[in-house]
Image (cartoon, rainbow, N blue to C red; front, side, top):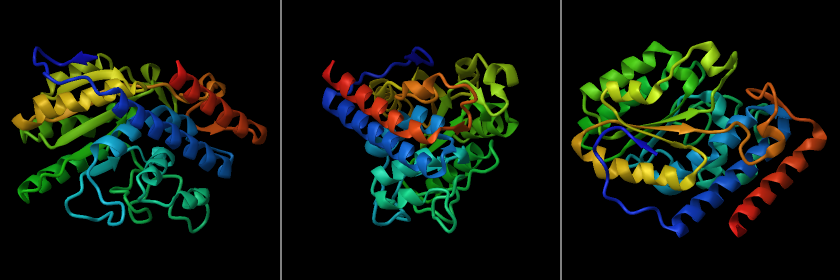
Amino acid sequence: MTLSSVETAAVSAPTPERVERIRAAAYRIRHHALNMGEVQGQGYVGQALGAADMFAAAYADQLSYRAEDPHWEGRDRFLLSTGHYAIGHYAALAEAGIVPVSELETYGSDDSRLPMSGMSTYTPGMEISGGSLGHGLTIAVGMALGLRAQGSASRVINFLSDGELDEGSTWEAAMGAHHHQLGNLIAMVDINALQADGATNTVLRTEPVTEKWESFGWYTQRVDGNDVGALLAAFDNIAAVAAAVGRPSVILCDTKVGRGVPLLETREKAHFMRIEENEWQICREQLTAGYEGAASA
């Protein structure tokens, strides 16, 4: 893990029990995503698998919410800036009990509350519509400002992608968050090195990403986004170091598209995957074998 400065957090490592609880939630999120993908035979399955640990850390460990009341005023806000990651977000909402698991089979169907791109007007627990990329952090800054003005203790967690770092609006929002000392704002960036037009570093090279966020005044950590223990430790560091002093925080998460399913981890054209009918069960079997194998190691 890379911390942003000489500041370090005197916190204990996450307990094995806590790590395993989140790892199990991530496994179920991945399983839900595969089941949803099979409904359409294609989709943004690779991103859902790659980001499952991030979703699990947020929903099963960090966020305060009431499953029976998605509009509860005291909730933390989770903003999915990358609307095409909705398949993973729906899986997390089902894991959280906000969306019934039985409803996941309607994913992408006519009249479903679970469209292929996230829409706040359709889905319980979906705070914003995330179609055009690059707007989520701007909305998050405004939301965090509003919550603070109301005297609310709620936090805003904004999930965005490395591709969104191409957008100037993202950096304007980052600058604004530092200016307004938004210690109630956390950004999670999925760095899977892939965009619709190709590898991220060939579309627009954004490295060194860590140094960029640091220069904008954010408490910055870069972790393996598929390492649950590292994700939980990063959140614990934020609580210990940054939040109390009014400093926005970012967790840069290096992830692997298709994580947990070897068949998909090496697939070309992985941004939007077409998966053959006979491959879905293979994917589920590989996912389960990997999860159970890691648990017994």
